[in-house]
Image (tube, rainbow, N blue to C red; front, side):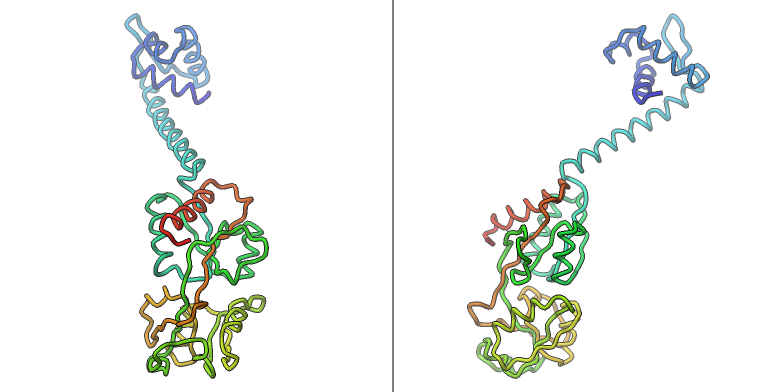
Length: 295
């Protein structure tokens, strides 16, 4: 039995005769009749009752045709799924992040992607800088959003947008009385930063910017946990300004009035990734960020 035999059965049942079915299928009547007879021999019973007026399904034939039509529907579904995945219209993108996916412009980019490609699932992993680089190289991640100061050498990447830095401080902090906050304002402040045993790019970047009197305290924690410590009075944190769109109990955000208080967010990926969905994601983010004037 072949799948085409099921198609022949359904066409014959719909036409009620071999001649019309053969015409629709582009076959001669004898060839079509022979295929059906071979199928009946294989199944061990007659599917059709033949007469001078045409053919009629037997009771067993009705059951066969009913199942054959279900199989045809499933085959068409499989073909549609294959087409969507083959063109990148469906599938999965494993995305690594180091910055929370909140606020603009990243939120707007993801909304636009979801609107255009609703059948592509985004699976998010939040990792340290070194772990993200390793996951891209080993193809355990497909793409990552990463800060410019955390990019690894020879990465395949392009900038998506530019983000400003703000400072998160406990309510009532002295920064609230300053006309502007600049790098010199951080003298004698405890600055809370994210860091892991093999990844201290954030601390190194901020050390080059801040006054020498600033003290760093490193935590193996998420950005939200760092903000929780800020709200509890353990120190201040330098964060992307889009995080300031969140309401964090006990935390106030202030802009940093310095020309270099900014960084670029890049999209990096592995050129060996062969999924059409990944290619669509990369091209969409590049084109959309350009269209919106972010880069």
